[in-house]
Structures are given as C-alpha cells and as structure tokens.
Length: 398
Image (tube, one colour):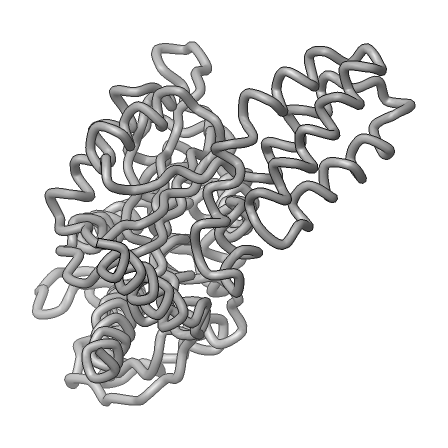
C-alpha cells in the first residue's frame, strides 16, 4: 500500500503541475510574440510595406513562476531594441496568468476593458484579438483537465455548488457551478470535478456524479455536502455504497433559523456540545436532551430540524476519530469557493454558463497545482486500520 500511495502522489504532482506550467509557458510566449509583432509592425515572416524590422530568431531564458520553471523564447529584432515588461510584471503577479486572460476575454466586449486589464497586469496594452486567441488555447487545456481520468481511489468526497450570475437574453439569472473535492488514498486533496449545474437539483447532481463515475471515481466511503434533496437522492442512486455526511456547520445554521436572536448564543453552545461527545451514542443522547430543551422553550421548528437531521449529521462518527474535524463539514471546499467568489466578483455577470465554468476551473487548476494539493490532509492509514479491525470483528462473529 505504501508504494502505491507514493506513486499516486507523484503522479498528481506531475500531471497537474505540468499542465499548469505548460499553460503559463505557452501564454507568456504568445504574449512575447504579440509584443514583437507590434514593435516590428509585422507578424513573423510577414512582408509588408509598413514593416519596421525583421526578426533574427530568438533567445531562450528561464523564468521561475508559481507553476514551476518555464522556458521563454524572447524575440530578437535585427535593428530595433526589444524591451519587454511582461516578464517582470509576471514575477510580481499573485494570481495565475490564465485566470487574468479569461477575465479579459469575458470582458472582451469592451476593448477598453481588455486593454485596461492587460496594461494593469503587464504594463502593455494587448489587443482583444490576441486575448481571444490565447483564451481558446486555455479553454482547450481546461477541458482536458476537467475530463481527465480519475485513476486512484478517493475515500472522502466533498460536494458543493457555487452560484454565479449570467445574462441570458437581457435577463439576469443564477447559475450553479458544481464542484467536487476528493481526498485520495494518499491523504492528499484534489479537485476531481467541476461542471455547470444550471440549478442544484437532482438532475444536475445526477449528471455530475455520473460523469465522475464514468471518469473512474471509485472507493468512495463518505460524501460530504449541504442538505439538498437532489444531492442526497443522486448519491443514493449513483454511489449507494457511500455514506452521506450532512455538513455540520450548515446543519447548525439551519437549526438556529428557528431560534430567537436573543437565545441564539445559548442554543449554539448546546448544539456544539452535541458534536463534542466521544462517540455516536453519546452524541445522540446529547441531541435528545437539546431537542427536549428546545420543545420546552417553545422553539419547535428548531427542535424538529435537529431531530430529523441529526442522523445524517453524525455519519462522520463511523470513521476514524482523527478524521472527524475534517470530514463532518464542508469547510475545506467552502474556503475554495470563497477564493472563486473573490475572483468572479471582478467579472460580475457572465455572458453564459460556460464562461463562468471556465473561469472557475482556471482558479481550481491554479489551487490544485499549488502546495494545497501536495500537503497531506489526512492520514488515511487510520481509515484502513479501522476497516481491517471491523472486518476482523465480523469474521470472528461469524
């Protein structure tokens, strides 16, 4: 098992890292070529009356980026000096190049907007036509990443939807982008899926989960998500062997909507005490106490929500105690969603669902290729030990 885990970890680092690095390398080289075209007043090998200079090939230089080391082919005009600010601007850039390019493309209906963004990033104005061509390359690479085979097992899968806005025929509509985060058998996190969902309904979740299964998602023990009937039904249909964990944080918020503000802190403390118990029976006993308290104090709606949902919110207790804090809520994927919202807020309203999906995926790819995807998130050996112990108990009982 140890050798397989190591192999999978290296494969993830190699595939995702190389994909993003190649995207950055291609993008920067295309930008350099476009800048050389502007200086010489002609494309490479083009003969025109307005041409100011010709090229004498290029020289290569290495550039260390957040995506890894890339090789740049810097153009060499024969007469005119070629001075570029692109490289230095990129070094200081905190966000991924491809995200910025897609934002330009989405805002590309306004040439002024495209020029403003490109100047802010690289200190040089880039035409909307150049940006459009670059984005088509990025889109193709994102599609390859989004549909890549899932070749390892993912015992834990977190599911969530993020709502964005699109302009459809002059009407502003909400659109959901569904995201799946998996913890693989090595204990590393990985973005394993993203798709346009339209709405977070059963059909959208069914299509999403089926696509994950077709790509090879297997070995799932637990799926974590918010309370959504469509999601729960889809999980039961596509992954009936997987347990469903209702996000503890959202569950508590749902309960507190039925509590007067003057008593919310008091009730919140009691709810937290439920999930602080040492095992499931103790959690259930504490929950029963809180239900009685809520009913006695005429908070029936909150009592009903707690009573009806506590079983789904305690699914995590069947797994290793060391994992409880990280598998009982959607906090991990919620942090990524906050990053996505921060990025998409700069666009505002998308022209269509695919544009929204592409920008979200650009951010997800960037996050995946960072240390976020390399650091061990959970010690999965504890899960396998627990499963072996349960199997031994069942064998001895029979």
